[in-house]
Each structure stands twice: as C-alpha cells, then as structure tokens.
Length: 253
Image (cartoon, rainbow, N blue to C red; front, side, top):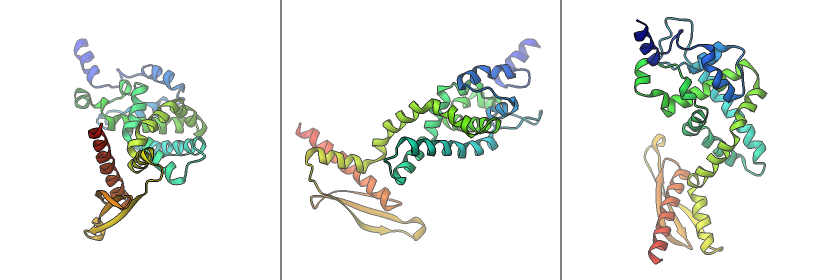
C-alpha cells in the first residue's frame, strides 16, 4: 500500500503530500513568508483538484482579487516610471503587461508550476504548465499576499520583477504599434514624408461594424486594412504598408 499511496500522491496532491514546508522554497523566492498558510494553499489550488474532502478552496476567488491588484500595481509603476507618457500610452502599456503570457512568464520565473495543487488528469496532461493556469495562479498568489499583508508589501514583491516588465515592453512595443513603426521607417528614408489615413468604407450593422481604411503616402495610395474599429483598421493597413515597403526595399538591394 505504501508504494500505491506514493504513486497516487505524485499525481494528486493531498493533505499528506502537500505540507506548509512544501511551499517554503516558493516563499524564499518571493521574499515573503505567509502568516496564514491556508491563503497560500488556496492560491495554489487549481479548480481541478477535488476540495470536497477537506475545507480548502480553489483559487478562483483569489484570482479575481489578484487581477485587480496586479492592474493597480502596474498602473502605479507605469505612472511613476514613465512621466512623459500620455494616458493612452500608459493604458496600452498596462494592457500589454497584464496579458496572460507576460504574467505566465513571471510565474515560470518563480517556478510556480512546481507548487500547484491540481487534479490527477490535469497533472497528467501537464496542465500546470499551461499559460492560462499559470496566469490565474499568479494572480491568485498576488491576491493571497495582499490579504495576508498590505498593498505596500505586495507592491514590493511585484517590483522584484521590474526588469521582466521592462523587457516585455521592449519586446512587444514595436509590434504592438505598427503605425509608429511605419512612421519611423518612412522618416528614416525622408524626414518630410507625408502619411495620411482615410476611412474609405463602413459596412455591417451597428453592433458588428467593419471599417476600411486606406493609407496614402505623399498623396498616393499605398495599402488598405479593415477591422472592427477605425483604429484597428489603421493598424492593419500600417502593417500591410510596412511589409510592402520592406519587401520592395529588399528586392532593390
């Protein structure tokens, strides 16, 4: 029976296989030790784990709380870090950093997947490595730390990963702003190049409106794009235009 119990524990964490000491390496990595270990356990418990046999809860409520706290910390950090940026730019940065793959990247950085308490089938399918699972667990963890301490503490914990946030902005900012990329590319060729965006058509009912935009450079049509908003259509048109220009430049070389 000992062998069977050991095998079962390796797939389905339970009271005997997960103790407070099991989480100590994670706390060391975080630089934060929980006063209420039940909060930490709850944050790490995936909904696939059967909690009916004990008093523990899964992490969805904490994930709800943590989502807002993460957003608040990121907003404050961006506000202080980039005093020259507009409200729109800061909102875009915050949206970027709060995306699932960026939060999951932080979760992987602290090996959060090693501590997740998940159901047998979920573990067998390596659900603890999935982006959505890691994102939710990270947000739940932030929510748990907040409840166990205060806002200043959670801010200190999160800003340990400031370099990851900065790297994420560097890596994704250029691809996230095709209009800016197009502007920079054209200005590198000629500083006085004139670019204009023209709404040429709208279609569909009000709740499913489609916008069509054309880009003109020096008054000449260059590319078109369409999307669910004028901004989205402009960005798609800019991306097409940039690809055209770079392809033409490559052929000339």
